[in-house]
Length: 207
Image (cartoon, rainbow, N blue to C red; front, side, top):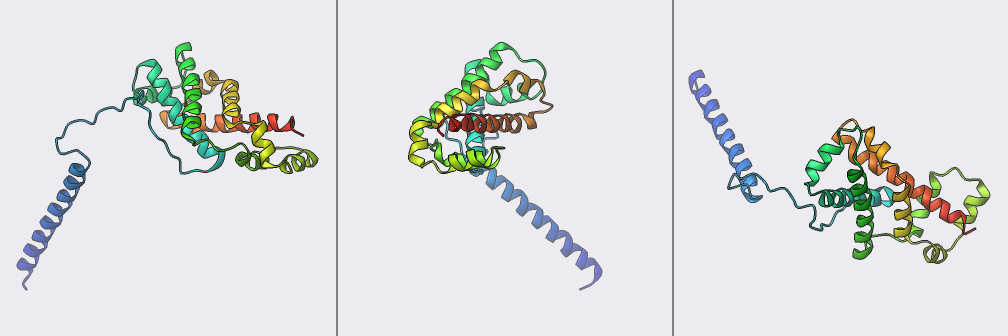
């Protein structure tokens, strides 16, 4: 094969590969409802949805809670969750309406998880809370020795979460955000710590 024929073959091959790639992209888009080329509809935050997390334990619990909380807040404020996320992610002072909506949205998320059975019992969260706590050895050992049945009868996960949400300084937290990327991560971190503190405070009263 001479050089001219080789170049022609290479050009044809590139065209075929390009067409195959374009066809693949269009196929995926059509399969996901993009065949009409209409913009995707913004999801209604007032429609209850199931949320999942790739994390376990308290971190996974709070991740789901924050997602539900933002949905609930957006519904109360009459905006999309995307618009609310962009707004809150800008940082700065937030209105009383936004603070109240987010706090109540988080509480509604707790109630939703309680209703659908996705809240773990308090006993499943104890070890993780103790691992990151600075307790004296005697108190920690005493708490770890408590039977799960005793913990679960005395502590309800939804009560622990509600108390943690009430203790959150949401105004200060939202004021110090620098981007939308920080919104979920910062709220999740704050809720996680508040849950641990609330859980440990309640556990101390059992020993």
